[in-house]
Image (cartoon, rainbow, N blue to C red; front, side, top):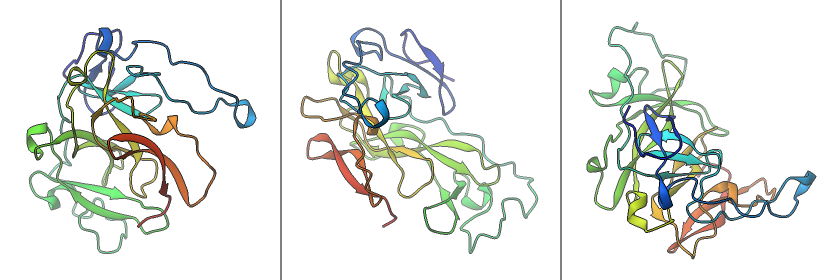
Length: 247
């Protein structure tokens, strides 16, 4: 893959490439994470807002992007899009991928055209399904004001997790757009009703108006019908409730 950044960590990205951290003020290690917060239930520290430009537990996400705080949010050092993963071989048996799903849109990639991928989608309290996804691979594939970021999908035939590009709203493209000590970052929000998947919501510069950069900075209430997400409200990221069910 393409190595991005020249900082202290250049780990293998989750989605097909090396994702180094930026150096200097724009890097993921530009300070401490602040106070541990007051004790929560069972002695666990309560979530607290991170300082700007800080990326705890930094790890590779995709070429040019690193994930922070165990997958709470990502930030982007270079605008390298999302590399396309390998598609299914063309000579798979005709029944490969078939699993009794009711009226699937596809079973194999070749049923999704030359650029599509057949993915397995399992939604909460609903039957699994197969859908065709046509991903972006670079920002130029998206409309103005959007960026191409990798999102987790389950490839139907192999049932392996792959990264496919999605066009998301973007008011910045890389950390350097945001000034000294600030990230161009996106929360990783639970994908709508999907099991164990988090998708990038949109890129924006860290702001003094923000309450959070990702979901791990938001305290959960224990309400079974809602979870507290780090979501865009007006011009700022705020810890706000979202429904826990499919709409």
